[in-house]
Image (cartoon, rainbow, N blue to C red; front, side, top):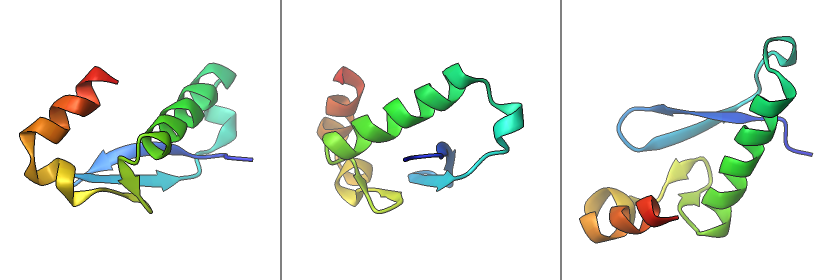
Length: 67
């Protein structure tokens, strides 16, 4: 069961961290889970960091925008 949402910090790091569930409505929790699932499904994340290929290649970044 995923209970995390992400924040972008530093230019290309996607950091997962639990949030205070009292401050998040169910819709926000679902959006966070959906976002994380998409990043994993399309192999954009590697661990908790966006893969370096996306940082170094504008063509790869364009692929992200099309998802």
